[in-house]
Each structure stands twice: as structure tokens, then as C-alpha cells.
Image 1 (cartoon, rainbow, N blue to C red):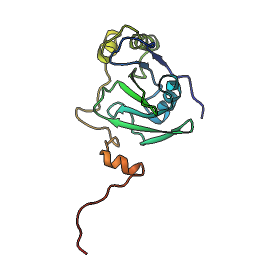
Image 2: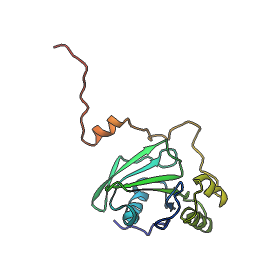
Image 3: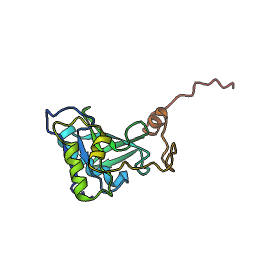
Length: 174
């Protein structure tokens, strides 16, 4: 698999703690295409990536896991994080939260957003970083609606899909 250089900027070590640790401009909102590039690029910051959490309202539907660079990476789509962020968690427990620059954002504006997200003194929110650079937030398909095919599984469903087993404790007479 050929990976393109990701468009990623990270805050330097020891930078101010803000709402994000850097910014990323994916080429698309298709997780199986975009996330492998990110996983490879984040290795210096979190080591091998074990999980990526993303917002279901912004991203296209994705499988629960994908092999990237010979390792299994779990994808967890949720509605509870800002739609313009992804969180990557290393197998060692280290994590980074990244501002996601919408792919159609023009190059110069996108670079300005990435620089703002990676500014060592910035504690700005994702919405403030986008707005200060003239980037409107991506809109949901419809208020309160989940994208077709993008349903959020219950934790026990995810566990079963990953090889676990939920025992049915209901009593059934013989």
C-alpha cells in the first residue's frame, strides 16, 4: 500500500495544553483511505496506534478495524466528540487529539488552520481555530440524524465483534 505524506502539524513537546494537540487535513472523509496515512504519521507521537475515535456525523461509514502497516487498528465512530476532531490512542496509552481541517478547504487557508492548531501557545477551541481562519464548520446531513450506515454499536456489540462473548443469562426451561 502506498501512503501519501499526510498533511499534519503537531504542537511541540511542552506546548500549552489546549483542546487539540495539532491539526490534520485528510484528503477525504473516507476512513479506510484517510486513517492509514494518519496512523503512519503519528508513530513518533504515540507509538503504534491502536485506536482512532472519530465523529460519525462527519466521516463516511467505516469498518470497526483495519490492518495498517501490519497492525490492527480499531476505528470507533461516536457522536460525542466534536465533528472536527479525531483522537488517536497508541497501544502504549498515549493519545493525541487533532483538529480535522475539512478536505475542501483551500490550501492557504488549510495551512493557516494547521499552523493555528499546532501553535505552542494556543489553548483555543476547535470552533475558535476554524472561525478565526474563516472556515465554516461542516454541517450535519440533518439535525439529529445519523448518516446512513453509520450506526453506533453498544459496547457489548463491539466486544463480541472483536472476539468476545456475551453470555445470555435469561433462563430457558428445557
